[in-house]
Length: 485
Ligand code: BES
Ligand code: MN
Ligand code: ZN
Image (cartoon, rainbow, N blue to C red; front, side, top):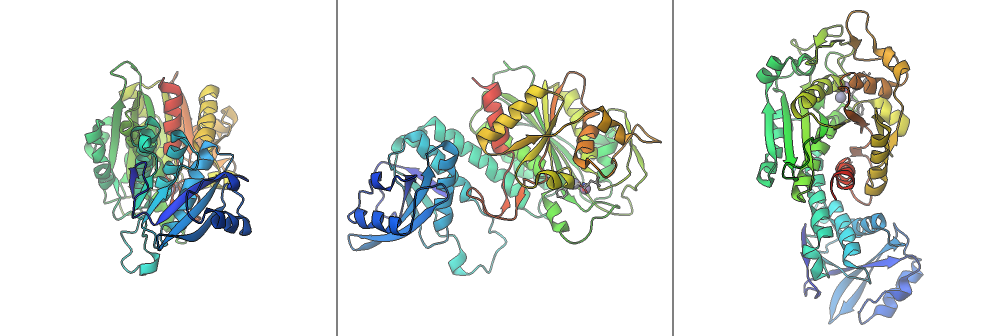
């Protein structure tokens, strides 16, 4: 989708979008010949300007048909404006309309930026594998023009647009199937970030073997696809912020469960088991894209979990890079094995003060919170609270769950330092406890279990069903709030 900015309505715009406040129909200046009948029609259809309400009608101008879309913004708060922009685009994306103009409707530049952000997010789709899509279902809307020339260079829009580009990268990585996105091709897709000033470090099997990453490599050994550890560094502070913020993502490009094989039904969903790593990549793109004044490293632990003659077995004992040994009770609890080595390497290499990991770690997370919140687990109350706040402000919601010694002892093993699964209860918490054992003294750490958030079975104002891009807005907000002035 192309976004343009000008003060004059383009001749070829065939759809006009107007934002309407709750009960605010009377105040909208349509500036059209038939404004009164449009207003009356919306009233007749019981359009009230609440968020979620969208009214579409047609009028004529100089003998031409013109599509009119009214989208409710409620009281006009930021997040509501995003939803209104997204829903207006959703309404007309495949409607035949080609060029939509978002009319100012009394909104200022900041508000219009929010609306355009919603429109940009909702216009993302992945149609590349559809060769027989009926003509009428194909997207037609190619251009959105916002009738505010100042917006083009306004910081609000430049920043939000960069965040939307980051989210688009995350969605692409998440939505692509596992025969196109595997560790090497994941890295290749991220390489565009180099042109934005992001520095790359990439480790392969041999380097990781030398470092002793027995936990991560144990997962990878059943796959034909070689693993990768990808580190992306963005420093927008000219070296002023010495210790970086570290973001570490679980990037299991496909999770069959390994020898502890998952059931067949629904297994295709495990193509998005790299959603944590996808969010890390998208966040790095957003931060670099808007030249964030922060020093951040993004690390992706990339492996494929497959059953094979060379795959690890239940009962195997592996040694992590940190030195602690792990009894692999269930090869399907692979995410924590990947993360423990990725997190240890991150702390050794970058000495972060704060480390946040993101992972589609446990099905139990979906049992506890469904698809409404990601779970956050932390050894630091302030960090947990800051992430909850960033979730509220950004629209990527987060809910805190407990950790503690009583849960920690549930993963003690009779043969090794720990086992990779606990008992049936508190599955998301014991997974977090496992990761906690790899956090160095003094490091503030938070674990986000995003299992319920990276994929959606139904559409929302900001996404079509499928990849949501969860995590990018959250982490971008957290960085903006705590590292930038
Ligand atoms: N990737 C899965 C978790 C998952 C399941 C995410 C469903 C999203 C939807 C993870 O690797 C896994 O298999 N976890 C196991 C852990 C269990 C063996 C202790 C699970 O949740 O069943
Ligand atoms: Mn698994
Ligand atoms: Zn997994």
